[in-house]
Length: 410
Ligand SMILES: *Cc1c(COP(=O)(O)O)cnc(C)c1O
Image (cartoon, rainbow, N blue to C red):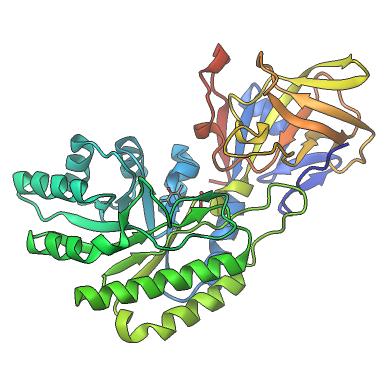
């Protein structure tokens, strides 16, 4: 048997059945009419936001990086509860606007922005987090043509990186952001050309579970901004410190101590208050806010033995939950937490491999996991499905189509 990650503490069973958002899984599935489906519990997201606001320094803005989960009802709920939405394409920008986010609270990062995307953002008064000098020039030219003052921030490629991050995006040659040495001249240039300089955006990495690594990266980010403010002769109006807060997907991983990060961040801000006293700060989080609030439910279609091993074959798979199959940015495949939803809390009886319905051996949702006895008709719950699930999976692959998505408590 191989270990699996821990089920988030937010979930409970009622009479042996998993409850999500106050409803039993059998009720949810019956109302949905079919499996597979993603179920998101807004009350879990609200609890994360409340915890974060309590933990972080007063006045710190909390942004939602919507690529983690762009499901429109969830996005509408987020837009009403956070201080900004970070988008990465014109498609996401459209969804954020439709979800009711105020244009002034939307920022648009990402390499390779096309002219029409830049034009749409500037036209709406959305802040562009510029990834290169060329992008700044194009934004200035487009704004000139539109006759508006563009809101431009610079995304910085920091000269350090987030230790222990699942996905490092700084401190080396990269498509993301402007190298530190080029930043002061570019800021002065955009201001002289009439831009409304909105500050800096610095994103060092993702899925970090070591609070000390995040504390170090935040302190280094604030230090860097103070240094740049001195060089430029002006403090940035806003610094987006990035995020990178991870969640525990796998065995041996523990939830992040955000309270400790908040205390350290308050100290770091305090120690640079003489240079950055009027600067607003934000963090942008995706998976930490929504990842644990989602469960992917899929029904067992077949149970079979092969060469002495038991396989549970489901109606879902990696076309919906690529990350749980271990094929989304992981080197070694490990098991996400999974359970038999209609025997929730029961002891494991056997070791089984849970697979999806796709014709590829990559399609494994649980590899040699210990589960209570189950067979056709029973429902498998795959946890940690609220972020990088439906929208980060190849739903067109093999033609089964996308999964339904449901927001409960919204
Ligand atoms: C993806 C991304 C995020 C969100 O990362 P999470 O790991 O989901 O918190 C934040 N900021 C930027 C710039 C990103 O590209």
